[in-house]
Length: 319
Image (cartoon, rainbow, N blue to C red; front, side, top):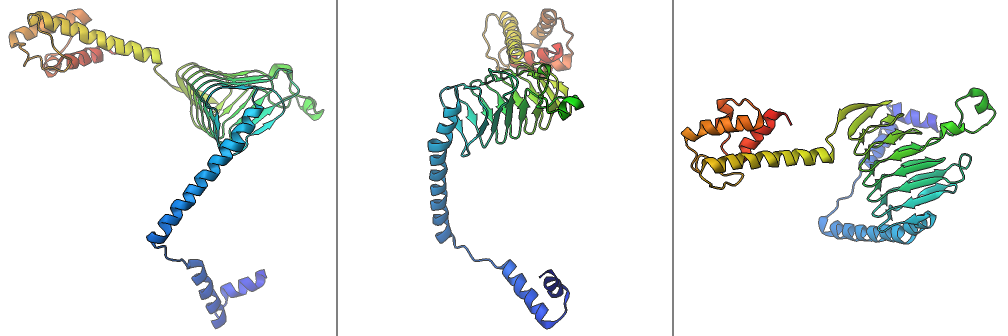
C-alpha cells in the first residue's frame, strides 16, 4: 500500500496526475453556510450542549464528588468531569469552592492513619491539578490554584537507592505537610514539594518548582523557585491610604487657616478659592515644616489643589 501511494505521489503519468487532482479537490472541498440556516442551527446546538453539560455537572459530577467529601460547605461546584479520587482520607471543603475540570486526589496509605486534605473558603482549583496526600495538605481561604498544579507532601519513594530497590516506602521524616495560607495565587504548571508553606498573599509564578517555604507577600519563580519581587500587603495598602488621607487632611487644615476658615474640597483650585501670591510662601513654609521636606518652587506652584499638594508630599516622602 505504501509503495502504491509513493508511486502515485511521484509519478508524472496522466492517471497519477488525475488522482492527485481528485485528492486535492476532496481535501479542499467545503460547503457554503448560509447564515439564515446555520445561525439558528448553531443556537439550537449550543442550547442542547449547555443543557447536557449542566445536567452532567449537577446530576452526576457534583453529587459524586460531594459523596467523597468528609464535609463540605455551601456552593461547592465542579466541572463536567468526575474527579479521580484514590485511597481514603478526610477531604474537608469550605464554602464557595470551585474545583474545575478533572483533578486528582490521591491519599497514600503507608504514612498516616489520619490523612487530611482541607480546602478553605472561596478557593478555585484549575483543571488537571493533583493532590497527593500522605499526611496533610491544607489550603487557606481565597486561594487560586491554576491548571496542572501538583502538591505532594510525600515523595512516594525513598531517596536511598538500596531502600528504593527493596521497595520500601519513603522515610517518615520525608513526609512533611504542605500549608497554603490565605490569598495565595499558584500559577499553572507549578509543583509544590513536601514541607512547603506558602505564606499569606504570595504569588507562585507559572511553572515554578517550589522546594522551600515562601514568605508572605512575595512573588517567586523558577526551578527551584526564588523570590523575584516583594508585594505590598493589604495592611500596607491600608496604611498607605491612611497616610495619604492624613496628609490631605493636614494640608486642608493649613489652607483653612490661611483662607480665614474657608473649607475646600480635595480637588478645588486653591488659587481660585482665594489663595494669593502673598499667602503662597507662608503655605509652602508651613507644608515643609509640617512634613519635614524641602520643596522646590516649581513643584509647589504646579500643585494647585489640596489633592495635588498631598500627592506631591506623598511622593517626596517616598511612602
